Image 1 (spheres, rainbow, N blue to C red):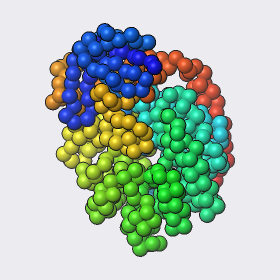
Image 2: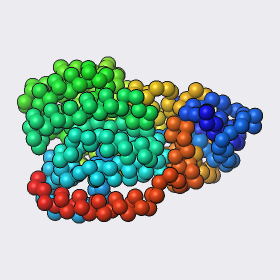
Image 3: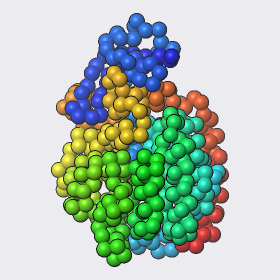
Image 4: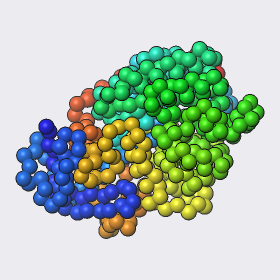
Length: 440
């Protein structure tokens, strides 16, 4: 049994009603918060004591949709053709990148994306993976990177026919099923059944994904209606709305994660709500790809926040999402967005045992200790505004995942981080050279 005490600290909840508690000790036994109160740690023989004076403790952030395979793409130097619409962006950039990934590239992508997430106060990342030249075993490689860093996470393989037809579909489904069974009892990493997007998955593929869901008990993780093309394709080839097509194959459930959804109609939103599906909003990626704005997110019951591969910094993502929403003339406030970010913990609870997302007794100790200096009172009625307008990843000092101190005083002590980044840069250059030889 390991006991950690955070002494004399402030707790700021990131879920409504955003309660703020001052000057308390937090006692953590193994992976659970067991006691909170003034002086609660004084009578405990702790293995680790952290001085929380003038610090603020929050529940760890959740990135509800990530692409670890983008980890080595930053500043990528390749020759690419025109990218005047979304399909050209995919074909000229992302679909060439993922075809250039091998085992080493996937491993270093997983390491650096997990490190970046932890250093930004993100304790869980839900990954959506693709590496068509390295399918079998690729999810184990992603999981290895997550576990070595100490991040909580989930991953899956993007089922698609875009490179190899039905053979590629079958291999992707098989990798998802194999991995889901392999990680069933793992502590930090779980699985979903991944799919790229409906316009690259034929009915036979969706049927196979439905069987995989029933066989493993896990939900799908799928891009839907990111661009108008996906909607038109579904109407043209199947005469169905996208959500109706997914329903046809039994893919809608309360542990399913649908991503982007910019061009879903109100009836589709109502249907996915009725199934309890999660819906990940990725404002920064949507802006970058110029696909439009998801103006109906206020209608979504289980809205969560992702980055779509734009890093694991949820402080940064949330600010951009909030400001874009206001720029569109829509009425949500900081509390709506911080609440949506915290709702990622409901998705985490679908896959991991225990309660997540609050700094309360009985909850998992996935915690972030922030060195946040507030120039104004920080109270329940303005805590979410402090999150959006004041706090940032710069204030993240220490991070606990599953009760273990993964980062302390801005240092991940069990890893040689500079060496990992130096090697990742070499691997990235090799990937770029391969990608530059791949035709769209």
